[in-house]
Length: 441
Image (tube, rainbow, N blue to C red; front, side):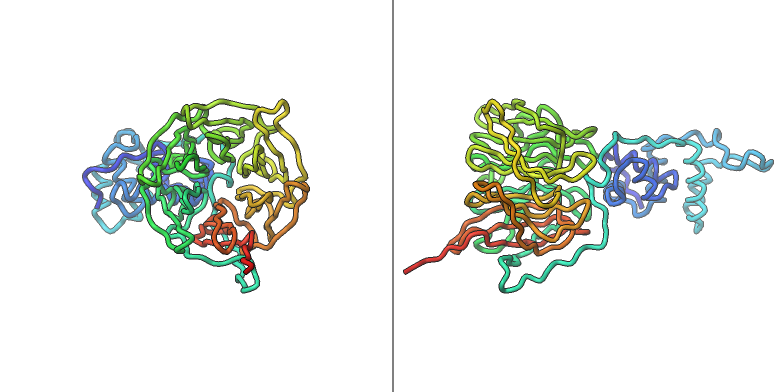
């Protein structure tokens, strides 16, 4: 039974509800709105919860009864074939009577025909890179067994399996923020303590977003932009204080962005490329945390999204990505303040997008990726010698939209690879020992 009052539906949820009323399948809705079936399912779960209903038929009835979707007056809608001499109009009163009987299947057919007459054309959202902003369920590749001889170690699993989240480290604690789950968008923040191998909940992010990144600057975690659950790209800049376990809002981005590459630099951070809701971007933005202000700098050579950025001394390395047509192998560096800030380097061995990267002792470690083709290995870049090599991966095939953070301990430096997508959202935490520390008596 639907509740008397309902939580307000977003514009995208109303859009999907209108199509549900036409009898459209999830696949048809996804195709019309240029989103994934998984996203449609997530929206439907939210719609049912907000309306207090349990089925598509109940949702349609509730929407008509409460005026959530426009419907022609009953006497104006003929439901029979034009050539049928016995054709007549069904009133809503008759529809409600049918709903109280056992013939809900017939009711669904009547409503579908009614809606098909009233809503002949569903509204379409702005074009977007299908299959790149959301994930489609598919058979997952097997995770490799981590052997005793491997540098990889299995750690305590993340409480909420997810991908496309923001990840940052402050004070030896790794924070996983927002992202996509099997239920859709989440605002959850979960913190992992590697020294204890334990997870804990923290204050949720005010705005649930996906395809988002994070960076730590002076003990605070900055999370710019992202794709909202209404499929709108955001310009919001939300900042988390781990000590206070509290969020605040700072100056918004100059331009809405998601799927950008992010890296700390000086008293702020850089954003490279991304998707703005209608096109891939080649813009470079710098945020100065001391003045809470943005400025635009030298653009990328070409637009791309889903790249990874890593800061090494006075340079920021930009790795891989997707340009709207292909996944990239590119390795470039950006030197702020230089007359010619962009420089090309030896490309990666494999094309990657949606990967994560980190720097340890003059080496860049690139983990995951794999959109257009499965990947079996990760890669290491020797900055000094401009050379790439491969190292093993605990997951074979697509492993994207994950997070990686380097953490030093008494045993050495570990790269903690968290969550991501492998045909399903992962909760796994894999620790790779990049540096060994040996004590000599």
